[in-house]
Amino acid sequence: MTKSIVAIAKDPDIQVMVDQVLNELGGANTLIRKNSTVILKPNAGHLGAPGTSINTNHNFLRAVIRAVKAAGAKRIVVGEAAAIGCNTMECFESAGHAQVAREEGVELYDIKSDPDLIKVQIRDARSEIKHVMLPRLLLEAEHIINLPVFKSHASMVFSCALKNIKGVVQDKVHYEMHRTNLAMAMMDIWAVVKADLTIADLIYPAEGFGPHSAVPLDFGCVVASKDPVALDATACRMVGLDISMVDYFEAARERGLGTSDENNIIIKGKTIDEVYKKMWLPYLEKFDTWPEYNIMHENSCSSCQSLVAFTMEKLKALGEYDKNQDAVIVLGAKKEIPEDIPPEKLILCGNCTAKYRNRGVAVHGCPPSEPHIAWAIIDRMDQTEIGPGFRERMAAEEPIWNAYIDKIVEEKRKTTPSKDK
Image 1 (cartoon, rainbow, N blue to C red):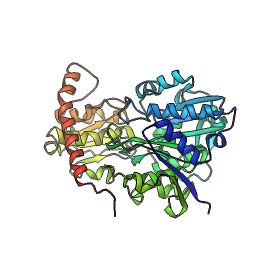
Image 2: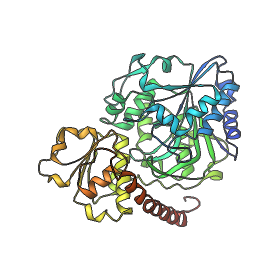
Image 3: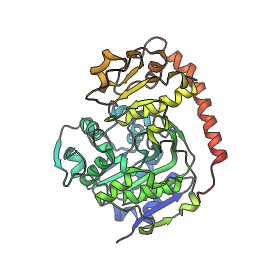
């Protein structure tokens, strides 16, 4: 078996790191054809300002654009399909990607708004996604370069190379992917949209309750590979995450997409031991992290999953967690909900649950506004819009939440070993 190469760079200068990992893989000139069209696929799925690590670092995007330009690309397109309910162009602006694109003279591309779609069959589909409508531009471009940020994620423990390619599909497919085996559905998408190269942002990867309430960790690395499975597995080893705890890797093995086996991966540049830093990734037990609550999350999307996970911790921060354990929290499309749940206990999150709104406490939105699920649980009142008192209540809760997270991070730092044995 041919071994996969993963390059790791660590340096204060982002451009230096990008150039180093490309050189370790043979150089940008050998990876990118002259006069080609190159699609750059960062993570810009949610609103999140530079410095939050919710999205790919904007200066990292700039460094990749410059490296691709230097290799002689004719057309560079920064493309994304933001999460369900999110506006891609607004996310680009929020992340700083739009400003970088304007300054560097490259295109911004909202994959979700492109009407020129081609139906692509997925051979030997392992999930219920048997075909997908994909933009002609994406299929005809000579190169796709995947630019994820490594971050904690409610639906899949972490997000990096493999999950980032999920952002090339329309909202309808996003929704359908969450109604089947999500890990396998992502691998089915990879079977028809293969990025030539992944360059991952581990400059300030996001630990904690991501993607909505992430804590940037000063890690200072860039990682690159032609094999997204090998890259993700290596990134996990760099941050102390046991890959056997993540569904991605078995699904990728079944699909034959790459290798996660250390014996079949060649590390170039820095070693894992040289850059190792344990990250706080609290979603290993997923919703079992909060066993006191009945959370019905089947068929839900990552946006609502992340919001509910954030809500559980916010309830703890506000001293409301123990008081509200009678709540039954529902997210995602459901064919039926048990009839015996009292209306004041049934918390219906997001527009997927709209048909049941007369049966409980409704939280409107796709996705709902960040604090509304917590307020619905605390107040047992419908949450429909950003109305009077919204900003004042948010402002009052923010220092309480920040102090709670700071305390957890401080405790984690005190107890984290320098290297797992």
